[in-house]
Image 1: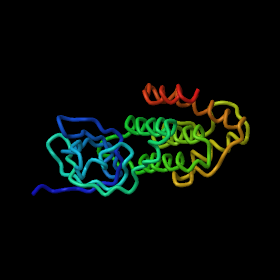
Image 2: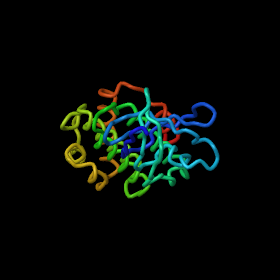
Image 3: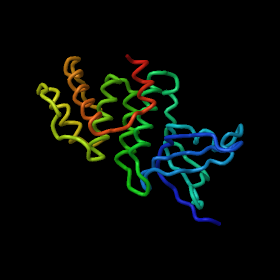
Length: 216
């Protein structure tokens, strides 16, 4: 029997493969971004069907093949089903997953990025702060995790905006979504994060194009 490994992670991408399988991209705490095949997951009633959907977060037991992992079983902690009931939330969530897929690396500890995606999805569903603020906090903290940011905003801003920026840069992921900004300060914060995003992230995200279309 082949050795198995259990990894904590989230499904970022789920695509059809062959007649009945799915090809998954998982963001895992222990081994970063990995590819895994979920055999039979497209067959009705298959035990892996639900665990092979994007946003599924939990513990995945896999065995390693020659070029990819194969999913044996999963214990899902959170499916984030509520996202699918709201088009805007789905678009925000999809953007977070696509961003994580872009930044995550193989065979590295991605604990912080995984926690950021998880907490950001929870913040969307919580509704305590505006979705557009959740997005900008997520973007800024992603740049912080990847070492592509400035300690202070890249332009002159109000003290309140600077405080928000410094809070996101310095706070642990678990404490990120505990503040709101007045509308005028939020607009400053958005401009500052967008300036940095365009400077440091040289990639066009398809999900972001869709998100900006429906929220414009």
